[in-house]
Image (cartoon, rainbow, N blue to C red; front, top):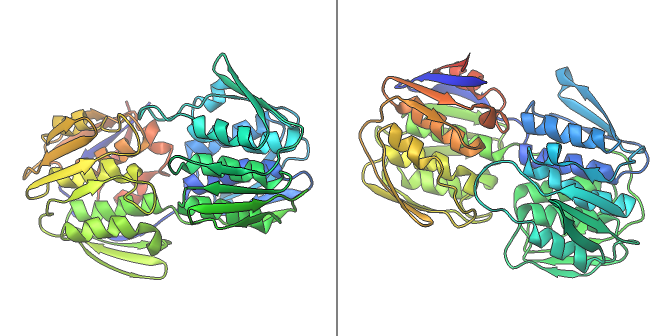
Length: 420
């Protein structure tokens, strides 16, 4: 396994280009299974562990995936889709693999998908997925850790979510695309990645309206057509580099971004004393000499993203004053707190709330990444900590960031990848 070794205290300066969104590409890959004839071409695909896992899932199910690393392109042909089981050894690696449930039900009328795995950030039940497909007429049971579903043909219905579910909304949209009649999702997730999936499916001839709002309607069609598509930029990678500039008191120009996807992140950074300017596809971020304390509550989009909670916590560790963070999306998503405290932070957690008393300096130490975003937060803390910080289990970080150490090194960070 690899580790990162960071010598902190370097002010970042320069230009960073953001990749396409991992969380947009993954459901788009799953959605490509809906095409019975022809090929789907996906451009500007990032080289990430999670993408590789999803490709293996598609290939296991019978799809053919051609990769063109130099062009960052994937070509998927699902004409020979012939397996309906997504096994534990693949789905356990990444929660997004569960997104094949909807396409398999729509195409093959039956499926057996392992309950998902991925980051250890508390329970993330799939009950909304199961409820939604039951409303569409599927017969569903759970046996030995697998969700087993079958139908004659999915039939449109109105589905009410108790709260917005990102992957739940995406899964139902994909299944309903080939369903008979109209499906309406009430209290749907409005994340940009949900909108991007809808745009991808509509480019294939789907009838999806309202994506990005709380009510999404899908008019089922009998078949889809081939398409070529380029996913949106990764707002989470962009936000990570914005915070890297902020925490080091540096200046970064971040390219290939959609600023309106970063509204709440920008709001909190501005309150922390960060200077931000932007145009249509670029954001410039300048960090202050010392950050101000800030309060953050995570919430589904357009709220502050739970995936940025660990990163903003890194900033508050060295901010002037006491900051408060409340995590309302996932349980147990304060796994990074113990590691931050090993670096000299002063954080106390009570239930879903954390109080962070800012310190003037963090000190390098050996810490361990427990998931993608906790790992990114530790990288940010390491950038500002005095001495040397060693981050173990960086394979978690590799799931969501393509060689983050290379991008950071180009803008002045002293960071190396080494064998642990």
